[in-house]
Image 1 (cartoon, helix red, strand yellow):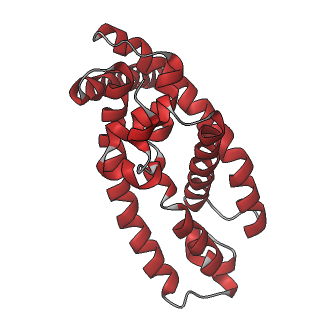
Image 2 (cartoon, rainbow, N blue to C red; image 1 turned 30 degrees about the horizontal axis):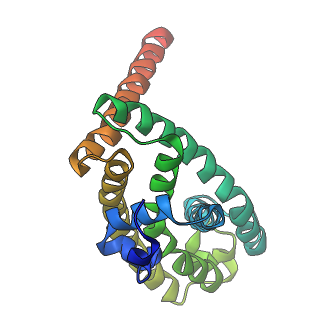
Image 3 (spheres, rainbow, N blue to C red; image 1 turned 45 degrees about the vertical axis):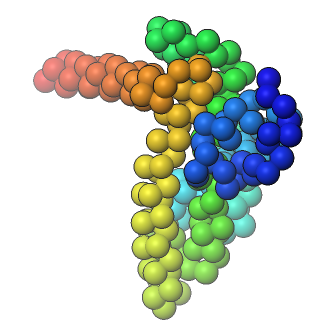
Length: 212
């Protein structure tokens, strides 16, 4: 374990962008469980709002916010728990030495960039619910003034950039947890995804042949 003094100037929320491996190692070795819970809550909250924006408007704004705040973290917890187990097992095939706890902490830390989008999701929902949802009842009574479209466009561009960099960081995070290269981390992430896609396609084709 490194000396804590090496990390005195490191803030995980900002350092993850430029020093991802060092940030992941810092969170693995130094940060308390309460910090991991905080990341789960914030990441889940952002993910919940993001998911709500691609759906029709069924609930009020307050309900969507509360639902995202409470259900989003649970969904992220389940997703990261499963992903961490998969990355741990596949990483062993590449000579990885990480533990499940280290992998879980690494994966949730790599999600920090998603948290930066949280304020924009909230602003968009509160300022222009008429454009926030795929289909919104408020669009019939509250025509968009243009600001909602601007926020949506900016958020779309930001989401793309963050998604790409999050993937890069996750490759480095998996590599750091297993103490091998980011390239091995890349294959540990991509191979299970590819295999899952093959299985899904196989079952879909099988269902189609059975139906006809």
